[in-house]
Length: 415
Image 1 (tube, rainbow, N blue to C red):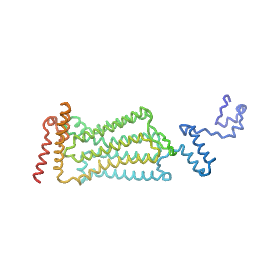
Image 2 (cartoon, helix red, strand yellow):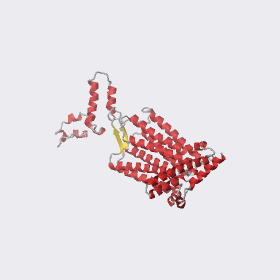
Image 3 (tube, rainbow, N blue to C red):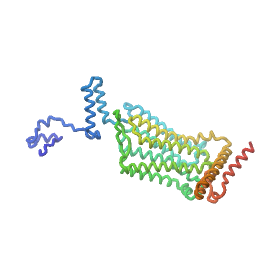
Image 4 (tube, rainbow, N blue to C red):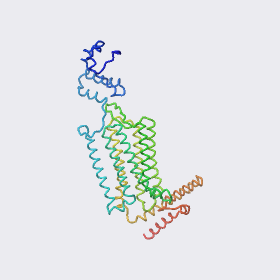
């Protein structure tokens, strides 16, 4: 009554004192509709797009139908995604069914751990850690399936948590084994060997802290406005604090892979894990490539939602299938390709690596300080050893090279 502000409470227009100020009969006959300002970040641009499309139909040459125009108007605010609804999208149903079959297959394949035939094949890592590795891979499958769900703040957090924890559960058990089998006797490897769950939980606790910090960083769904009208959403954060947390998580993941590569180099000629180490080097290489592609696509502006979806799914499934095959299934296939002269072959490789390492060390002595040369020399001694060394053995001569050389000579004389 004072400011002449209209109200949506229709009963007010039945009160006498109100009707003395405003035309109640007029306002009771009107239907008030608010501007949909919450549907678009820029209402004026939204209104312009609607009017532009409507004018094409009203004042156009009749080549476009009302249904087509209304679909274009709807696309201004509609969010496209691959749905599990068969009426909306068949790829969503195919992905869900395929993922379900793969998960069941992965779980059933855990029976190899308890088979007498393959018992010795999988004894390099404790069975409970094998189960955790499989759980980590399955978590990434769930992340892949969440791409067919409409993105919200909740789904974004769930996807991010599953992806990070899945990566940790897949590779930290392998890192644990590599550290436990470190070729130089030390108290840290001994401690980790005995306290493997504390080692794993330390990484999981770090990831939990990062995810709690990401809540402050506002990790949320952002709408990508496609020029062709096919809008879609991505999970991201625009706060600097959130970006720092994501970068820290990526750094931790890279440190895990880098630590694995360092251990692989030092354990390259350990006899009992000779072939496993080489498989793990492939695993590290493949995952570095996948991680690099994943990070690169974060900075690429993809304009079509289906292209975005397909590229994400290709990355997820490249990660899932490559790690499952090289980490788990290769343990069954690998013995088929290892012939009976594996020891002679191992010795041959060791002998060659010894010759290369000696030349590298000699070359390094000419260009580096003595302390650095000594460190490099010790690293190559560990690299060429076929078992664990202690500090006294490490400071002595490279007996592993001599042993390898004698084995090769003996094998050659027999031939």
